[in-house]
Image 1: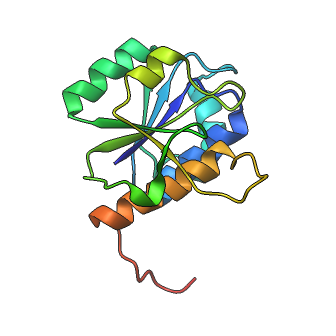
Image 2: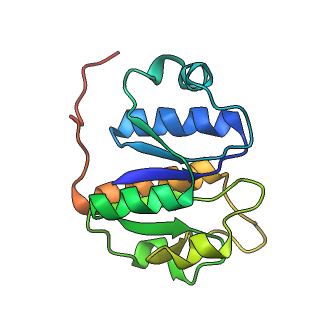
Length: 159
């Protein structure tokens, strides 16, 4: 499993994604361009003390990312408020990359067309959506739960 941010707009969400991926030992892919300057220094600042635990790969655009994903044998799964398939109804294999769209604009049609599945998280009537990283966390946890993909000990020592 991997988590993919498509052209993120908000640097704080990048920080939250880095922390999420570090905690679950899941690689993070960033599809550029971003809506903010993305330097190695900015990534270190966003990652705080989770940078050493995170595996981050930057991709120079959607085409480059598609080439990478194909080479890794990944099934691309788009999280979308417009999807028909509900997250609990989807069966993960463990070879997925969860794609999260831009916070302000989602994803363009070419991204949607190049993803194998589109999933929606069920929420209360009247609520629009989760924060994009919260949605990613829910979906990532479900994928890892289904596939036994947790790469760490569930019984860490007490803090």
